[in-house]
Image (cartoon, rainbow, N blue to C red; front, side, top):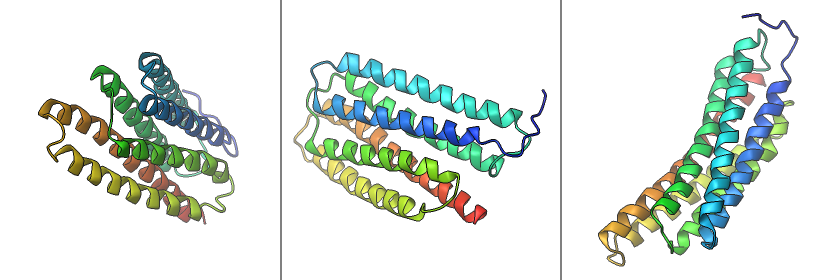
Length: 205
């Protein structure tokens, strides 16, 4: 394999930005799936397309990593950031798929709040990606992501309490719990993205 001897591989920034913007699109599709059950099959197909695009972005970053001699920051951090973004997409797609497969018509109100937190985290993550070039003005991003993750944890605990309150039958509890767990994992993955960016910024400062 021929290595490219370039001063810096600026294309990484664009690839990360594309991956983050794709997650924003996916988060908005997820909002539609949760709030509008009229055409969930079509929306789930849109989500699968986002997941496929996310895989392509991840593969492009990994391929570039294998081809590059010089990288804009540590190779390990590039790998971690790409993997973290891929995890976010996978968890959101899994939640959407389970809603459709289990034919869950009505979800607890807090699930909407859970997904809205993910949508906000996606937007903040996409907004932060262009600032990787300068490593400036990023601390507000990871502080807010951490706050959102704490909020997601609280919502998740409320949902668990509701599921086990006796309001739902055992099968419904099982189905809904799988969905909310995937959403909680997505919130955690957003925090992992932010933690990785914080680590990169500290190293580069």
